[in-house]
Length: 521
Image (tube, rainbow, N blue to C red):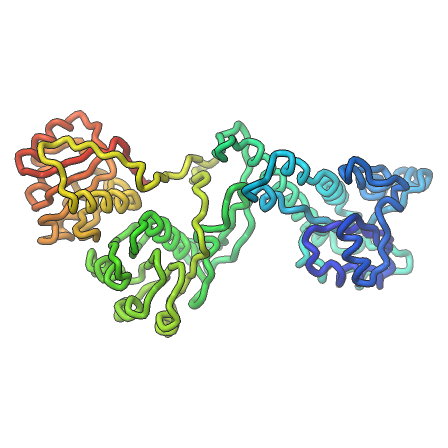
């Protein structure tokens, strides 16, 4: 019996090889794996001994040989194929244990060259895996160290004097084959992503595209308890390992589908701000956002934006959660907190909440990449809606320009509106939302909702709209002016822009155009 082992991930491989040796397997290997096994006291032979041919082209060719692939691909239920092996003195290979070099990590290095990247594309490994997986009824193929123990259990249960292991359950073999093909597919996806990236690292939209996903965790349930769900991490060239999928859970119940969705919405929104900021989200929509040098005060202002809605919501902070902030949260039930860190006293206080899930985010943010949205029969794919702080150029269109204080609030409100479901309206004052309206089928209703929530706090505040106002007089713009809003930020581009400007001039309200919109569906 022969096992061929060549792995980058060497976790548990010595124990696995030792178990195979005890069952009578001859072990062949290559390069670093051979040395690793030999250093562990195992008898292991070079693949060159099997092929009778040395490695050539600086190791580019070592397993691409009939002695290897004939032994893997021969069907044991075809006498003529087994006779052909015998005539060619090719021994059958019963086990192929291979996993591939992490190409994504290689090309993520800042100084990697195209030549380095190409040299780190494995050819022999994927070829052996595909061959073994194709012949899975007769060959065990392993790519995942977590399968070693179960494979050994099956082999021990089936070990017979004849030396073959065909009776290892077919379903187990099939599952291993599926893993092998998926392993190779994910590997090839990473290579394709790298090769279609331009010099700036921006991906194009190719005619054919695959996405590689690695399961991060099983979720409690989906959007509803009767739906099963899991969270997957995208294996993507250029991704730095950030994002909500990389969050470390420090406390609380297992995450559900909605928990992840809302936590992601909150984290994406709070990451938009450079000042210390709090975002409170409910049903994937912000209900309060505030920036303040004191993160505890930022929380209080975000909460006061809409004190009713935060119950059962998600809090995201872009600074460490302090004990003062944790104390300010007393009396309100939250499902999730997300932050880059927590003071020890804050963590101790929050851990007393049995149902609260406490997430700590890793350093660094996730690269923007591409945005995917499932539709029936396919995927919508677009660039992520990202723009640096300094990239927004405002054009004053009214007689009065905004004051510096109004301008700061306008920029704050514009960022906030970007993360509210369209049609989105945000009323803000002193870098805190005081009224948010969104997710409506017209632009007037969310203005009414935001102004009603803001009440008297709308006076002296600013208003942001994620898209232009189709109507102005006796409509959204004039409603805002009558409520005491002193400045408005919007994309512009409506047929009635001049009417909106005229109304603002009549009330002495400043208006600026951004020239871009931020729909969020």
